[in-house]
Length: 221
Image (cartoon, rainbow, N blue to C red; front, side, top):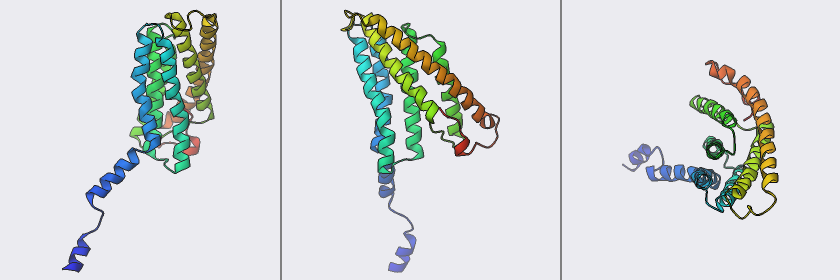
């Protein structure tokens, strides 16, 4: 009887499997990515509600979210916790944060509508790639665009604070902040156009239903 029972035990208990699955999902890098998603509506609300100090609060919360973007990948690599789920979570959180905040900025006149188009196009291609079990990681050009975008948004949020009568309203930095934020977003847009062309070119086989490109040939974000 003992040998028969032993023969029927072919795997770990269900509870152990569930705990392992939860442990993979609730790693620190994944939780940092989730925090960016949760902070996005907070930043959007602070932008859309024109009360004194709202722009400065939005800039601070956005900066915190942006720092998690810089930390989660490094922590995942240092701890050996790089997974397809983690990469997907990181990319999704980035797009949600940037696209959400940019949409709110368009609504209050801080950005023109067409700048948001690139984020939506690339987000759509990423979803198509995910449906084909392809995870596209960022490269140097995409990372440079992301950095310029994050800094540009932060500076424009400071300009928004001055615009809505916040602590920066009485300073002479209002015009300088608005100008600096504008040109940072122009630089980010140029990088976005270049990376988008390369992205679409490299993704064309997948869009046409061909086999996905090998990792070394996949385009940047």
